[in-house]
Image (cartoon, rainbow, N blue to C red; front, side):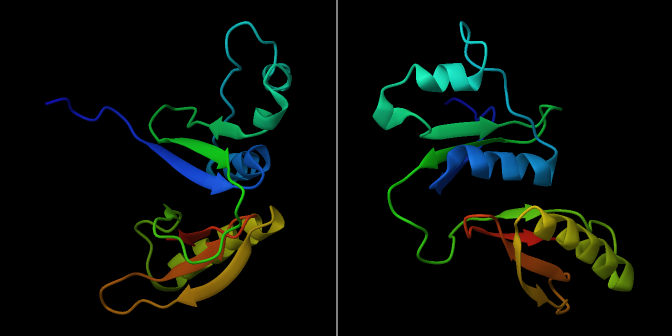
Length: 144
């Protein structure tokens, strides 16, 4: 039985490159080099048939630790709540007002990038305080 070596998180979206660049800014990820034989992703994209141009984009953790994020164009818009979401862990190890301040500071940075703040979930004795947000296409994620 083969073991899993790595994972990729895939987002369905309308504008793959735009959403990928948003998540690069959120996570400090980078756009990987274009395929061999192409000077840029724009060159690679223009080599594709028109119906496939702009249909996918990706970003990676420059340290190689985090998962690759892949963004694929789909025809339908987002309609309901995500079944899977990312937790952006900015408050790890922090509690109370210190945790809230860290989450609020990151929330302000991400809102400036186009994210939307939805609601603050207070600590309940089991779960820590977190902020529920949406990316630039409405995909939910948490600041945790």
